[in-house]
Structure formats: structure tokens, C-alpha cells
Image (cartoon, rainbow, N blue to C red):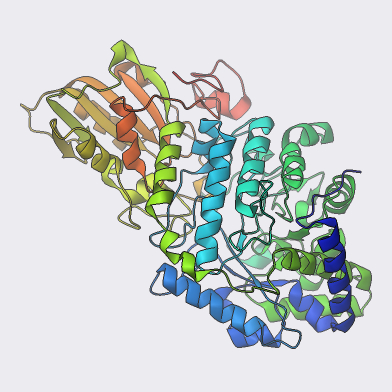
Length: 600
């Protein structure tokens, strides 16, 4: 059996185990179940956190205070922690957020490229540095827990979470996922998890979420209409991973082995189904493989509302999940109903007391490893680092390294500094929200000036002040306007999770028409693609002189301009195979347009 890498030294681990045993001895069943309960921040008050001895409070996507400032975040989280410290045993909460590409709910935070872009960099040292920067921005706002990195290995790019994956290859995902964890938890040989600027990482979603099959997502009538079935949404997200165990182990399990070796102390469980069981009910995989075979000694947390997918009866669903090996439940709303249901299940003997004690021991152990009992708050003296120039410079480096040059006919790139005129079109060229994508300020993200940053248009103006730059979002240039080069930004609008499931990854009709309009006004056409995954461009690419895959670059898209003008080389390589047509995506047949790893 492989042993889990604890965040503590052997001496510290022994001391922590003794403290956990002493706490357990004092705790009532209500306090234990409270520790296993995770509640969304708008559904509970600090006073109720104390009354129910709640273990964790979270902000979901868009779960922001008003006003949305780093200072308001710090005050909000501090208030919940102060509430927890008023409970009988003064056990601190651990506050969690989905900081999947920076502290992305916070206005003004540094928004890094989504994981698809980081996968294109192939640079573990860069990803580790980003993990460290994100941890510091979290701790500045008193947040100690990040539901990241996503270590899915997406096999079907129609999935709306493709951009959350580093790539289609388990070796790449393993290397970059572990690097992010090391950076976030400061496990680089010099610091431990209880370093004041460390935060707890949460590799997700165990296991096989990237292998789900199109058209297999179920709805749950007892939960109401979570989504409609009359479009592509939720066609693959949360679906069935229909592979044999050998494939599950070869493709989807390696990133978790690497994560545990990298110091993971918490893992989130997947909504998906494998072997006829929802993952939250899968004792063989959660307890047998993850905790037993891989020796994971941290704690498992559910996904949002996930145990309620198991059974219309909350008591049965809770008992099934806890018996399978789940330790903490992201309720997230009606925590009283969950507490009552699990209490009844324990009192009826449906969940053994030993399983409760094991779950609570794991949760308390990680809280002690984090040093929360000694320092329950973060470090508000770090507030100036949120969105700091140092972190934005790191994000600019990530943007530059993520760019993949897919076509460069006649050497149109790099652009010359002596370029007399440049036409620029496409709404995305000047839109922060589009370049950031989903999971930015709101769960789904949104176009518009949602947070500070630099657009590609800003970068072009700064990089070539001598060049006449004409910008029209719609490419509606006067009939007599000509230029040696036109640059058009096209791609995807923001989305998240199953809302981004798409059966057809072709460019939109509006984008194709925009490209045709600009083509008439320029000698050579450069296309920059903002997308969370490869898009089908086979029918259009012959009309373009250059194509750059820029993914979802985050708040510092201005850095793209320096690469376009040759200040930095193109370095990125494809983290996903680029399909020639949708048949290749749907059934894996035919030659790709560009192979995995391609990049000029």
C-alpha cells in the first residue's frame, strides 16, 4: 500500500493525532456531524455556524460580498470564522472557494489563464508559481481552501469543463496538477502546509469525470428541473464514464496518485457514474482504491448537492455516501435537513459510529495540519498582493507561454514594428469578460468590464505606438479602408460546467461573417482564437494567413501582443488533439487537423 504524504513531520503528526483523539473524546454526535457539514455562505449566519459547530462555509461561483472588494471578502470570511470560534469547542471552520484560475470571484484579483492554456505551456515550474500566487491572494482574504486543481483528463472536447483540464494526456495532467498543489501548499522542501501563506488544494473530481460519454447525463426529478433537455446543455457533464477498470486506472487515476505524492490532503468526488454507481456511492473506489490502495489519509468532500442525486430520501443518500467513504458534504443550502437526516441514520445504525469518527478525524487532522487552531484567520497584511503587479507579471508570462501558433503562412508573424496600419476586429479583442471565460466574478462568467486587466487591444496599442490601429468590434470598416494586415479575435462566449456542453464546435455564423468582412479589407489575415477547447475551423482556415490558439488568457491578454510582434517566441503546444471535423470528436475516427503536441 502506498502511504499518503502527510503535511506534517512524524513528530508533528503524532502530536496532531493526540489532539484529534482528545477532541473526538469531547465531541457530541451533533458536533461531529456539524464538522462534516459544508454550507453556502448565503444560507447561514456566523451565529448559526457556532450553534451547529459547522465544519466549513463556502462561496460558490458568484458567492461574493457587496461591495465585491478584497477587503469585503476578508471581513466576510473573518466574521464566519469568529462565529466558529464561539462554538463550545472553538473548532475553526475552513472557508472554501473555487479559485480555479486565480481568486476569480474577487473583483481585482489576478485572473490567470484557464488550465487548458497552462497545459499548453508544459511548464510545471510556472504552474507551481501560479499555485503559490493564488494561495497568497486567498489567504489575504482569510480563505484557506481552494477547490482546485481540476485534474480531469478530458477525452471528449464537447464537455463544457474541457478548459478546466490541463490536457488529454494523463502524464501532462499529473505533472501540472501536482505542481499546482505544491505551489499552493508550499510543499517545495522549504515550507509546510501550516505556513501562514499556504492554502489547502483540492484535486477534483475523483474519478473519471473527463471520460464521460455524450448523451449519458441523467436528471433527478426529485431535485426539480436543474437543466432542460431540449438543447446541448448537460449532455456529457455528470454523465457515465463507460470504460473498463483497466482504462479507468490507466487514464483517469494517475493524476490522483501524483496529487497524493504531491501532498494532497483533500479530494473532491465526481458527479459521474462508473460501474453502475454514482461516484458518491462508490465504496470500492472511494474507500478501497483511494483510501486503501493509494493510502490517502486526508478527507473527501462532495460536490455541490451531489449526495442528493443518490436518492430522493436525503437520509438514504447521506448514509450511502458516508458509508462509501465521503467525509464532508457540500450540502450546500438546507444544512439543518442534512444534519437531521445523517443524525437519524447514525442513531438507527445505518451509519456506524466508527465511520463518523473516521470522517471527523480526517477533517480535524487537516485543520490542524493547516495551523488553523493556532491561526484561524489568514493574513490581511497580504491584501496589497491581490491583483499586484508581481502576480500580473506572472500571469503575463503564463499568457505568453500558452499561445500556440497553428498556422503562419508566408511568415506574417511576427508583425513588423514598421507596420503602417493594422485593422483589428472582434468583440473579444477589447473585452475582459470574454478573454477570462467562465468562473470569473460569476459562475458562468460574463462579457464586459467585469474586473480590471488588459485586453489584446490594449496590448497592441502599447506594443506598436507608431502603427495606425483601426478597431471595429464588428469589422464594419469603410469600403475604401485597406491595410497590410487584419487581426480578428473570434471564439467562444463565457460558460461553465454542463452549461458549456456543445454538440457542434464549429465557429458561429456571426464569427464566420465577421472574418469574411475583414478579409476584404486586408492583404493578410491573422486570427486569434479565444476558446476553452479546440474549435472546428477546417472550412475557414485556408482563407487565413495565421492562426493563434490563445485559449482563455484571463485578465492579462495584453501580453499576447508582445508575442505577435516578436518580443517573445511562440512556445505553446497543443494540450488537446485539434479535430478536422465533428466526426473525429464524436467517434475518434479520421486524421486530426493538428495532432496533440503540435505548435509552430
